[in-house]
Figure 1 (cartoon, rainbow over the protein chains, first blue to last red):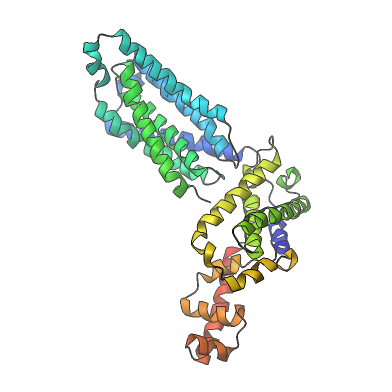
Figure 2 (cartoon, rainbow over the protein chains, first blue to last red):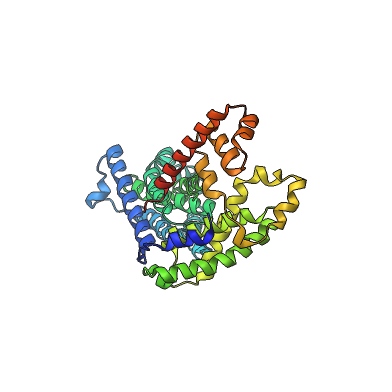
Length: 213
Length: 174
């Protein structure tokens, strides 16, 4: 086929394109994924006390701030990554910020506490549940992000996949935080942050396969 | 680009034509380095034009156009190299001159679409089409080469062409 003919073909019956389409697609994917994860949590654990208003301890608010901060920063990065080109380092730093904050807060809490209590702080209530449930709840958001990103044109597939995994993990952790009463700050840093990073790793591995175009 | 996004067909065509010249130069430079010919470059130009067209909603109007085009071209190039990794060294020495000498853009047609479509055919019809329609052999030569009878070649070519035209129709919705 001649290139001129192809250009002619592409130009015929040209449809106008609205701006902001891609951004809306990703935000819808975020909402759908979050709702799906929340429903899965309801099915698994039933209605948690925190949703009904009670039980907003300082720690739960901190956990939610951490995961929601990650999800927000990650989503704005995803919107940039879905377009061809370099998204810039500033946004990557923004994603690192919640991790840095929770890790330093966790370390400070450990230093202030009695060393004898460290074991109890780090291996707090249900650490294994965090490790299993956060990736489990992250599955639906990740799938909806992949579907949305396939309509875009990401050029760095591994990084885009990693961030999609990270945001999905953060959403999974957000939903999990409603059910879970966290033990301490170091516990949140390790058993929320760790599974979220695990999700990011899986996303990085799957990205090049799922997002190719 | 902005006019094209609003639906101005003439502006869109003009843009794609201008970009295709840049893309041709870009891909030729990069492919020449690894010893690939200009037909491959033309395949890539066409692939990239299709990508620019179908992914035009990913262009952010507040940003510059060139980095966006470059990112897509680069992505297509990397994807192409990955796909054809195995066949990079496949060009025989005797053919290399011919491949490199064929440098006139107006005479270069891409084999891209046809090759993709051919993959859908059965092996027998594909071979018949390849020998008779693409390599330009006569029916008797093709029969001798493939070990099929002459009438089998004729039937296969006929069936293959019909299947191909159906496939082309399926692929272009308009």
